Image (cartoon, rainbow, N blue to C red; front, side, top):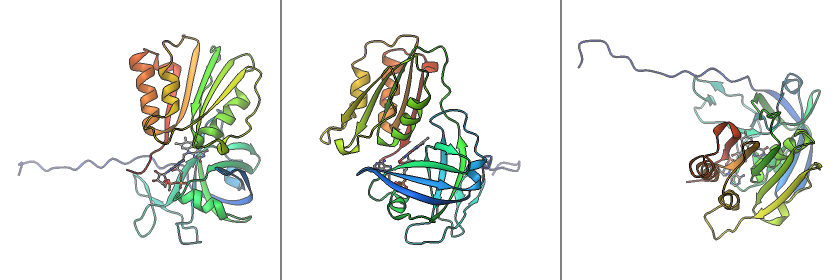
Length: 259
Ligand SMILES: Cc1cc2nc3c(=O)[nH]c(=O)nc-3n(C[C@H](O)[C@H](O)[C@H](O)COP(=O)(O)OP(=O)(O)OC[C@H]3O[C@@H](n4cnc5c(N)ncnc54)[C@H](O)[C@@H]3O)c2cc1C
């Protein structure tokens, strides 16, 4: 034992914005792979979302229950009274209008929010907090490349709605099958390529896209969102192999597959 008193360092993170009630007002099946929920609540009215591809956190009732229990912040994470983790996930806020907004949710088996959204009818209760920061558009960029999987489709929709008209936009989207393809906002100078994932391959077609590039010019900006290891591989190729500056890219892991 040391002669001096020992201290254990407990990291306390600043509490995120509070989780406040929302209700579902409509649910639309956009495709066999995507649901759109319209929601309303006073919390939405208070959201200030200056940039596209921002985020909010949605809390839904724990699987197998219908009551929404609001978790408490323990200095590090939100926990329910029994110590378990709540069904609290991140989504992209779309089309905020007063107290209303939309969320688009990928339908995938076993997902807490995804499963809840399948049956969430008008009046279903949930809670929302946010916003998390979005993508700051560089006014000097002349070309944007957007790369993402199905979870990034809402963010890409949002970006296509607001990226400047004079810029060239190249979009690459990975889908599990062609049924997931959706109509996206038209932009005068955009090209959209859908890539159906090869289920036999470990490598995402998005990595294949960037691996084909031999350079990226200084005026191009790259935004990417999707499965975490795919995003890491894209990051590695752009920064380590091609030497692209970090201020040209915004690359974010959106989800992790089960171990
Ligand atoms: C900034 C940001 C914005 C996002 N925006 C959106 C959005 O607008 N729409 C959206 O659908 N998602 C979005 N996501 C991703 C979303 O938060 C995750 O996919 C989340 O795990 C989904 O929650 P869930 O409750 O349905 O599944 P979970 O209960 O979290 O996951 C259950 C299991 O499914 C796996 N899993 C999670 N997501 C997927 C998937 N898409 N496909 C296959 N397996 C999966 C997990 O590994 C886990 O094993 C965003 C993430 C971030 C960080």
